Length: 456
Image (cartoon, rainbow, N blue to C red; front, side, top):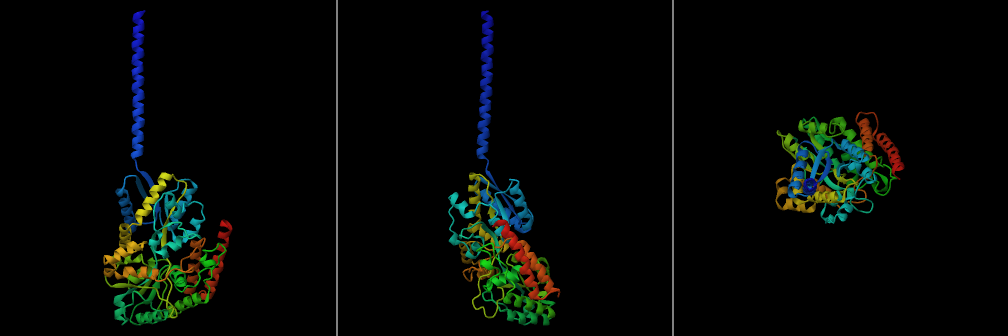
């Protein structure tokens, strides 16, 4: 009996030892798991539209941030062109699978602001105690993405403005003096210049990319005339397009008249056609975004080209700033506080001098801070690359007015499509400029009323 009790005791003691080991192993596992979890960096997901060479630049900036610290890991994902990326972001938000950051082109600003899906950048920085001196940023860029209270809703990223590229060799052949990088030629002078180009044997004088953006939106801003009522939509959803005003009608009428002798010809709505015509030397002048600088550097090998500011009317002695294109970074809500600290840290990192200088040099897009611009100037970068400063000077030559700060319209993508459709009817002799612009305004106002009804 005593022997049996002894055996039971040994069994119990053995069982207790096994239980202790199991508990110890379990505790050790969870301890190691927690340590691993703590050590693993917090992931920040950024969906963007930067592909090819620009995508490589974006990836390089992401890697630089990830290598600079170990707490956060930014993961960039290409989600197609601007339209596709925006649609992907909206679908992901509805499915509660949204990224932390979404790159959205400037025409989607009003939609994003009223979506209820964003965490405004100014609030993000305040809540995460991230110090940002907004006065050190290019104000013409910031103003495009500010809300009605003057607070920043999204973080500017790839910002551009249109400029005028011209073929130096063709200008010399036609006996045309080189254009100033600081002072705009007048549209009357443009008529003479394009005429000389055609008479010298060039197929066409001028082509333009993104015709709504360059020939109506920026034309209006530079001359300080409204594109839409209510301060271009900044002061209310009950805005209406007013592009069928005498100045814009006269401008489009002038371009149409130039088509008769090839001083102007239509190369397509976007940039591919006009750029191809310029590269083939079928046009001596090409109006497009400053982001075209990087592409032209790589594509043009057989002639010299240069950059000048956009033309203005002869009576505009002090033209206003041009307005921006490009995109900004929007922060989605419904994420953890710890993750937002990483988002804020990444956005601040992107705005450092090193990153902004690298971005500007590699892509042609603006450095968005004055410090980066001053740093590049002090390094002699613009002395060596003067054409890369033309857009910056044009953007900053005047403080933005309520009209020249930008556009804040709902369904802006559809509105641009309408304007493009109506302009094409002008170019193919189907409509007069006035009839086309009247119809563009009327059709666009229907879209604006629909947007107003949805978001009021």
